[in-house]
Image (cartoon, rainbow, N blue to C red; front, top):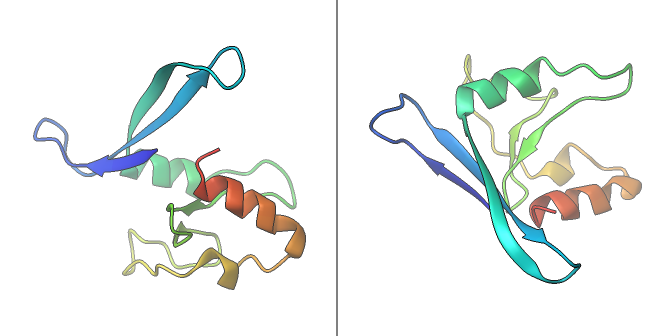
Length: 104
């Protein structure tokens, strides 16, 4: 689960990423969360370089692209919220997208 908030003590949008902790499999034992500012997350994704053919991007739970190397920088231009399928058309990539949308 991902939520976005703007708490009064922190300037800008903060993204909270929370996932259940399963142990043993199929038994939820708790939840783990991390808060990160949207500006830090954007910087990390923008400058991610793992290899010649790898890159990072951000989508929301509906599959709208928030940040992608093929889109303009959202800090310089108005963000474009395209469906990720418009940018990632490879059939083999569809399971990755499905998993991202489910937050798995």
